[in-house]
Image (cartoon, rainbow, N blue to C red; front, top):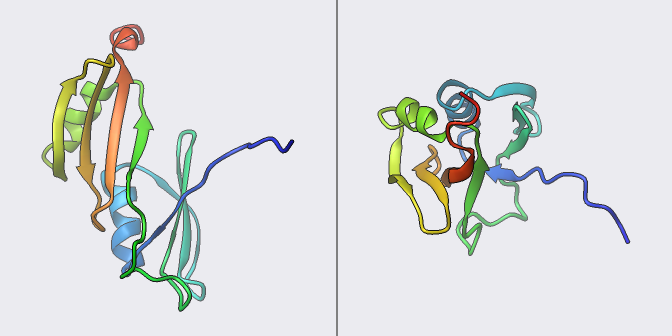
Length: 127
């Protein structure tokens, strides 16, 4: 059986420049590679990698597309919330949920939902 070693989502965007800017300037990702001929870019922050791409002719942005959200595990969710709450469009504010996760969600510039969470038992241990 094959071993899965990573998941690197490709987010489709009609505006590569704006999306790269959002992830670099708002979420502090680094641009690893960009290819304007392919309308493609690769970004990374810590252990998280994503790719961005302008959809080509066989990809249909108007169809069903992606339905869901992207969930980021972070080590200081309250600090991140304080940083992002005035810079982004909020999906839901920070809250501690019954499943023992403290989390919040924002929208990126394309409308993708980005959730950020930390297990309650980890809060305060890294400080």
